[in-house]
Image (cartoon, rainbow, N blue to C red; front, side, top):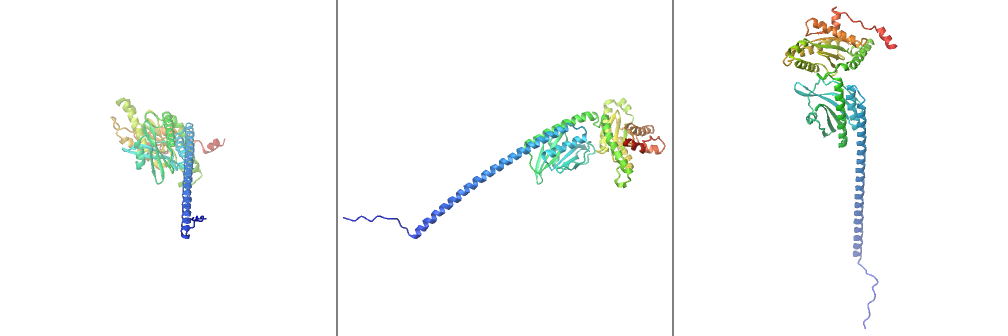
Length: 413
C-alpha cells in the first residue's frame, strides 16, 4: 500500500517572482490612485466652472438690471428739464452713467457744400469731466472722416457696434422726422448686454420725443430758427455774459484775461413787401428759409439766431471782440447779397447792432440795435451799422445807461 503524500503547507515562490508580483500590484494601485485623482480634479474643475459661469450670469443680470433702472431714472429726469443745453447734457450723461461707459459724445449731423458733416456738441467721460454743450446745429466744421460714424449714419435707425483693441464702440442714432439728426457715440471697455442696448434705444426714443416737443414750442416753424418766445430766456443768459465781462473789466485784469463783450444785432430784409407783392408769398417764404440757411452758415454754433416775425431776425453774439464784430455781420450781409434766391434773384438785407449792456432792459437794448438798423434803411440799405459808431459820429443820441452807483445800490438792496 502506497503512502499518501504529505500535505502542502504553502506555495513558495522564487524571490524574483515574488518581487515582480509585489511591484505589479503596487503599480496597479498607483495607476488607480492617479486615475481617481484625475477624475476628482476634473469633477472639481467642472464644479468651479459651473459656479463661475453662474456667478458671471448673476453679475451680468445684476448689472443689466442696474443699467436699466438707471436709464429709467434718467428718462424720468429728462422730462423735468426745459433748456435745450440742459436736455442735451442730461441725455448724454444718463447713457454714460447707466452703461458705465468710458466716454459718451453727442454729435450733430448737418450738410454743408453738398457733404455730410458732424460736429461734436458735447461729451462726458467716466471721471465726470465734460464740456462744449451748444444748443445750435449750425457752424458745422468737419466732414465725416470716421468710417464707423459714416456707417452709423448710413444704417439709419439701427445701432452700429464694433469691437477693437480699446473695447466696444456703439453708435445710437437720434432721429428727427425719420432722418438721422445726431449720433450718440459710446465707448465702453466691456460688452453691453443686448437687453441693455434695447434699453438705451428706448431711452433715445424718449429723448427724440422730448426734442420734438421742444422744437415745436421753441422753434419757428418756417425757418427752424429760435422763435420770439425763447428770446427772453436766451437774453438773460446773454446779459449774464455781459455782466461778467463788465465786472472783470472793472477789476482791471490783464487784457488777455478779459472776456470779450456780447452783441445784439437785428437783420431786416430790404424791400420784402415788394418781393411778396411781385412774386407771391410762396417765394417770399422761400426767401425767408434761404436767409435762415445763410445765417446758420455765417454765424457760429454758440450764437443765437431768432426769427422775430415777418422779415425781421435777431442775432445774439457772445464773446466777440469789438474790432471783429462788424466784419462778422458784414460777412453775413455779403453772403445774402451773393446768394441766388429762386425766381427772385438778388436779395439784400440791412443790419444794425449794439453792444449788450447788462444795466439796460431788453427793450432798450433792442431799441439801440433797431436805431442803427433804421439809420441804415434811411441811408441806402444793404449795409451794416453799429450803434456805438453812430453815437460817436453824432448821428444818433445815446441812450444813457443806469449809473454804476445806482446799479450797485440796486444789487445791494
